[in-house]
Image 1 (spheres, rainbow, N blue to C red):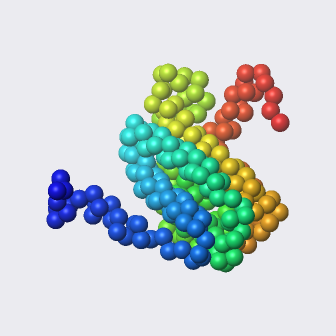
Image 2: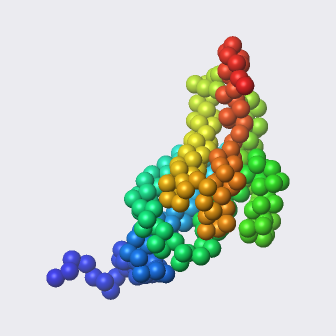
Image 3: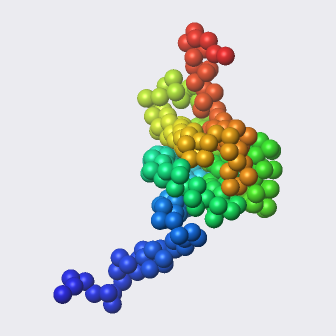
Length: 253
């Protein structure tokens, strides 16, 4: 006898498992395609959470609710760390198996993930990576940058400006300004794990199809993927490291 009643609201209904577990529509007879689909669907769920939390972070920053913003940023960093770790599972799909069902993908590509572009834009890449990035994003998804509104980058700098402190002052006096310091470090971790994921994604692609091969979306590692490892949501926090090195008597290139 069941210990719970399916007539009541339950786990299956709450998680919409009937829909979720029937969302894997395979396009080839190859058994390894299931892993490929599930990994990418999982990424899309994480992107949804990152967008959800990212908008909350912006609201908290604009209200100068720094502890709440920092907590959510730290969690976003953990999510990106998990996203990076997921690549090690995808690497357990052999290149030989992948090539057997790859032709069925046709032009299907992670390049077409609208949520990931929205996360990049929410993070502030239209500001930090410039017009070239914004134009490229518009080519992929017309109108995607039209109603950007506030970004993580912009909200972060708004909070810093209202503190009347420079980034160097915050870091040099980090124990006196610990909340601002931990906020900065949480932002840095977002960049760190996003860059780490991009770098490891490149290695996975090279392992799977080769460094000179064209992806199903028509892109190449050298021309498209490698330049993205230079993207930062918070470049000022990285520049600060150089400034502190120089101030300490060191040299930078």
